[in-house]
Image (cartoon, rainbow over all chains, first blue to last red; front, side):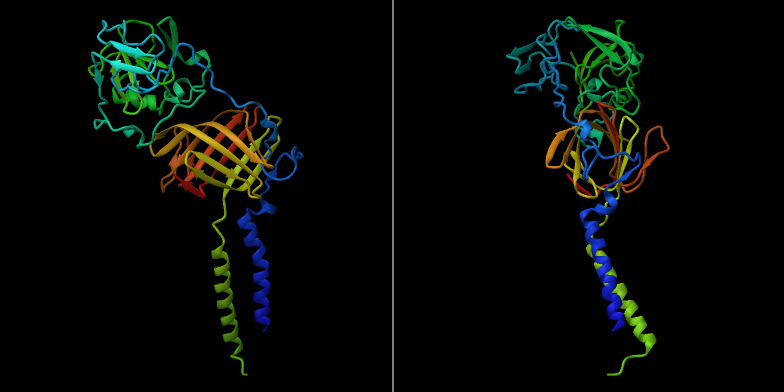
Length: 240
Length: 156
């Protein structure tokens, strides 16, 4: 009998601990207040009340960008797509490659490729499957980073230390920055065996990436000098 | 009624106790083991142990052990560095005291290890444990939030 009593006592002692763990253990889970200060909001939960209250950050319009999407400029895949018309300038008309392309812009909604562009398929991910370079995970740009973060964790408005020249196009100046190691952009450069150089001189490979970003590289046996649009899903280049 | 010998009774009781304890503990879910650190710009630090980490689609839900506060953290620009997925944190929302309040988010990065083995961070000796996350972000007013731990639930 005394064993049964002991067992019952142990069970009673265990039960609150278990239910506490299920609820998250209020007693021990509130957090160690290392600073010792009083909680401004009182009660449980996170001490972050002073970090709320501002209006949500809205994404500013990007002058001149006109939905320069990923890889939809003049390469025939822009039909019915609201993305892909880079501003009103319609890249492909009057480009550096001698007007090889004619894009018909229908109210900034349709981008028709009439004469075709040169597509340089990724030499590493040859099956051209979408996001094959990223373990099949779709890459989406993150607001607040240059190129949406494609070229690395470079915040918009970064210091001039990482500036890698500028490109003037359609009355707009694009600033280029140094591609960060281990970034998707670094993967792209590696795939095409390209080496990034300062933008500005002529005779370079000029790659327009996501979110109005641009980088430059020396031409090689895979990519000749010229302007290209980078498609982030397949990491293919399309001449502009 | 004649009782069994004392040694037998002790062994029986011990076995019963072990059985019941295992049963009771077995009913409890695995305890959350995440840790969240909130460092205010004035140096004040709050450390939250045993936070629950759930990934539901593209959002990370971080709930305090008392269940009274949840941070919902959204990510984007996820790319792989080896087998480690690196994402930029794009926003964070505090769900607490009956209110949903967007944080004055600045920027942050999340390192996600979905594999069964520890994965090293680039240019670092730090390793992210299996099925775990290392995440940091800052707010506009300079508050630093760091979250580490193993996922309690992942819904893709």
